Length: 216
Image (cartoon, rainbow, N blue to C red; front, side):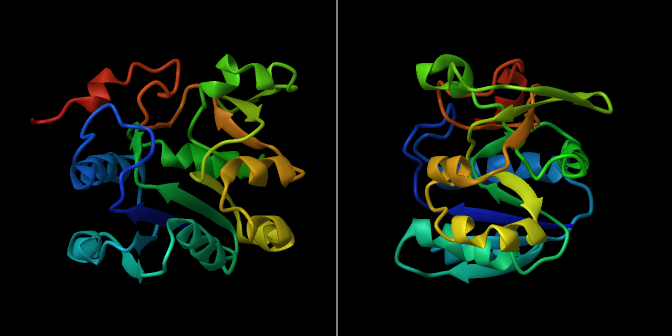
């Protein structure tokens, strides 16, 4: 099992509910929640043109500094690293807040599904383009999972699956078309393990306010 954690110094397009004007504060806040969500899995940090953060992240795992010209290509670079692995892998973004001790459920989910995500995307409930999608539910141990038409670049799969479908993943710089092209659906717990930190797009069914408390 291996985790790839990609971070960038650039602000996201959709503003987060906290630290809208301080990307480093947001990154550190989210990463601290991630540390409480994982156990002892090895992590490789891919720093997308933010070499000044190397000292911080090197305390927690291997650091690779990506200095390419475009963030989209750092996604492809991460995919290239991940597809060399054997077994289960997680590829995570830096703007997710995690519930404690939850990464274990993603590993368990990969026993059942080709791809998993920690995030139950609210757009799937709200946008008309998804109203005819055939949603399914499956109980795995005590967790209810649901398939989804798409998700973000925070997801898990296996190195074997990435190599098998590399003709799709290699062009996966845009998440929606990538998921639509893949023959297997991504599954996520309906009680999200983590949420994308985007105002108006926080995962449903969880009161995230206790997790957003800061010291400022």
